[in-house]
Amino acid sequence: MNNEQKSQLIAEAENVEAIRDFFTEWWSVEQLYEAEAKAALALLHLTQLSNKVLCEDEVKAIREALNQHQMMVEHLKPFAEKKGGDL
Image 1 (cartoon, one colour):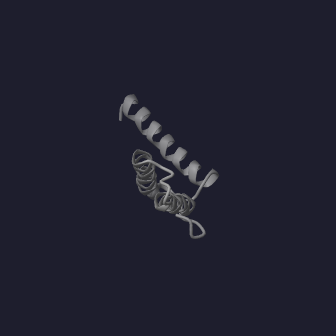
Image 2 (image 1 turned 180 degrees about the vertical axis):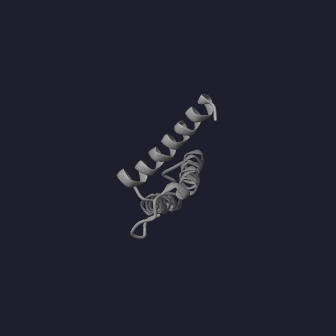
Image 3 (image 1 turned 90 degrees about the vertical axis):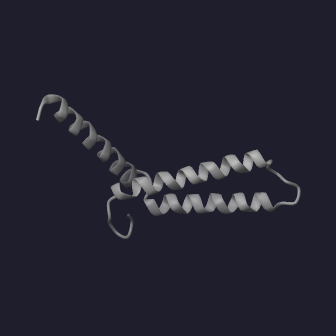
């Protein structure tokens, strides 16, 4: 293994460690899903108001952000440590 390959492996390991740190120091996967679910419910409530608090473009932007959040969590999920029910 040459030095470039070693450097790349070290960088990848540091990236995985940073993701693990995120879950141990910030939020668990469950907390991320809970936050997304609460935001989705708030969005649904706002879109049902009769006086149309949000325009369609705003609703679309929020839905897209929620979808991106959910996709991010799904992709990060395998890196989370399993302990005490948290993924």
